[in-house]
Image 1: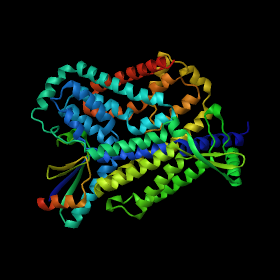
Image 2: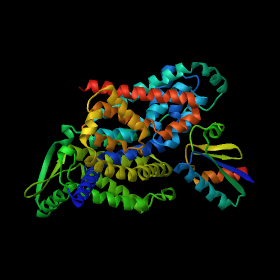
Image 3: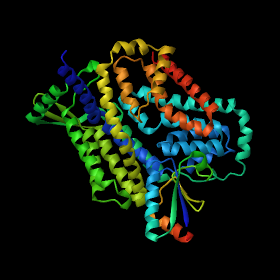
Length: 80
Length: 452
């Protein structure tokens, strides 16, 4: 089970990131849980300065931008 | 007065304000400003600034860098809070974090250019200079008040790599920003070289004369109340704006799947609108006189350069992100702004000028402080503070208290106070809020005294 977290206060960008990631997960047929982390102290614990950030299995993969599908796919495939 | 006449009066005032905004001012200022805000959010490497905000950064570097960061990075609330929290907890500390938090909402590119066009260049410049000065001052004072907490902070930030990025802003990005800024200035500055018409030709067009007369009847101009009528050029611009909005709905919504025909149509319409808005169109007794001025030439050259650069130097992903961010700002801000302008224009006829003049008609401490308190408790969405301020101005508010209001309104709202509270705690937030109130009042007083 892959543990995917989206860090960010719920702005349009965070929703965009979640949508893109969900699309990749669905395409690859990965079994994953999605969690939205909205509280600032929890976000800070991941050492990110900018949101939205994508965290997979407690590892920060991107922050401050929305990676494209190909990038996310490469990360998730490498992680499986 | 009977009730129908009263309602007609209100609606005329509301639509008059709305029409004047859309047609006369908004385009040449807001269209480029939204593109710049989008570009800052999408193309600006944040590490280029955050590298100066690490724990070991010298004060002489970290405070100005925070102020600059507030200006360049804080175009979106998704950026402000996380950056503020990391500068505070893991980077340069409380002082620079507070400077960043203070400067951001007051000096972003949208607010400044809009203020400049609607209220006046003096207030826009004062907003920049006083925000940066007082932002740094409040940061320094906060750091001094809470200097004991620094010890704990130093332990928290041992061996931190968050701020170690070495990114620089690429040269082509800098040039691109300068071109965008150039388009904004060329569209808005009221100077001779841009305004003067050097070639003009007249068209006999009775329809234009009739249309103008009709527009005057619908929305009678009232210079005393600051209500302008809508011009023939304005009506064409409003139609173009509606077309842009329709095309953008299809062209920008799915931009992450690539640029499509509708995207290109939207961008083409935007360029056309800017060019058309730059023309000097006058309707007189016989018809239209269309004048070619410096503004038109500047806008054509700059738009060509901007589109050429964005196609040549930026990757498709960067182009998409830029347009997506721009569209996001427009969607988020513009509808609320239209409602705000409409309501503020109606309020202009409802609020007795005597109230405003008694309360804030002159530059006193009390007047400035009332303006600040009003700004804190009335929460207006981004940019709506500007038409509200314009209404106050028309009703006789002094420019000093007006500036105090414009500083306090975006800076402090009940909502932002609550969020700040979760990051730095109750005591520090309370001190911060009090200081912002004091310094905003002072800013108004100083500015009011300065322009007297």
